[in-house]
Image 1 (tube, rainbow, N blue to C red):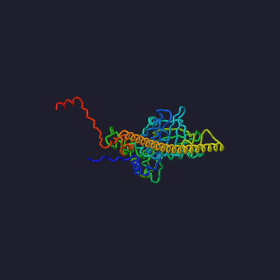
Image 2: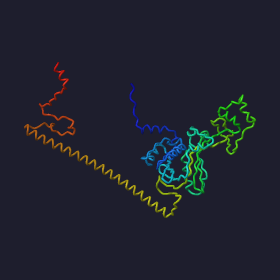
Image 3: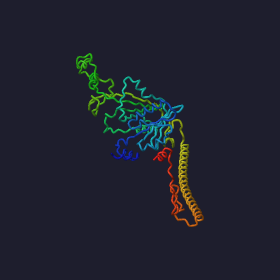
Amino acid sequence: MGGAKKKVHPKTRTAAFKASEPSEIVEAPHSFIIHRGLSCPYITDLTMDFRRIMEPFTATNLREKKINRIKDFVSLSSFFHVSHMGIFNKASTQLSFKVLRLPRGPSLTFKVHQFTLARDVISCSKKQMFDVDHFKHPPLVIMNNFSGEGKHLKLMATTFQNMFPSINLAQVNIDTIRRCVLFSYNPEAKLVEMRHYSVQVVPVGLKRAVQKIVSGTVPNLNKCDEVVDFVTRDGNVSEAEVDEDEQSHVVLSQTLKSKGNLENHRSSVKLHEIGPRLTMQLMKIEEGLLTGEVLYHDHVIKTEDEKETLRKLIEKKRKLKEQRKKQQNENRERNLKLKKEQNKEAKRNHDAENASDADDDAQYYKDEVGEEPDEELFKPDNNSSRKRSKLPSGMKYKNKKAKMDNKTSKKFKEK
């Protein structure tokens, strides 16, 4: 028989797993997307849709409970390489979306004006295109109109870009770019529009019939005697179809896996929206993790004197918190030390009480028997409760007679 499997501590097993992870996964930005506040099925669906956008470097099946706090997720962030956290917070009057840079900030708070779930976007599309394989690679991030004045625009654009892995244009495999996320800023309304698309690349200059054959789609040859009839029935074979939107035509630098898209040949790039949609407005930027100095506020504008007063107040609170924490540590150490001294004192009193009881027993034995007892007879023992005390020489314990039930006693008498 084989020996039992040796148990491995979970921390040791996880550390070995992390050491075996490739550098691309370790260095890529990971994210947690959760929702807080009032319960609402639409907010839960929106959270799941946003997790699909952040795939594959996100916790898709993350289970969250009401008892979980933000600090619980922050404590696990370094262990799972999590660099950003998105929080949908449902209040009675509005819905907000917070983007946190872990573990020290900054924190961006957005007010969500409108949102559309992914299932609603796909159901409204004329040509629905949704492929699960497209979510195996991170999306391409497109930033539009974030070059205006104001440091908050630059910080907002940098935060959105850093939520997704960077792309090296010299080494990227074009076939892995299957999705794209668009962030567009409207300076007049101060709104950020977010859209999510699936990318499709099709060859240009081919008839529809030829495109179906090249792409591997089985054509309907019910009304044709040969394949040639299917290709030539809509016009001349040599006459190539031209896509209406010529701005979408590109010359590929690589050969793609999809059929018909060859290197140095023209292809058309088409986008199919797969949702969700978000329309939000930046309200506040905080220096720390949901706390600290307010770097930007859309409604409240403070003077330099007011900002300086707030800085002093925050610094005072921070010092008071450190002092309180230090006092708590000192109190804890003092209580532990006092507890150890009390345990030692109780042990000393117990030993002294056992010794006095032994002296009393020895004196009683001397008065009754008339001779000095043995030294080990009344010697105090801490484990005396589980041991039988020794008797003087010549004296033995009497074994108790075994008791028998009625049936056993009758059989014993018959024998």
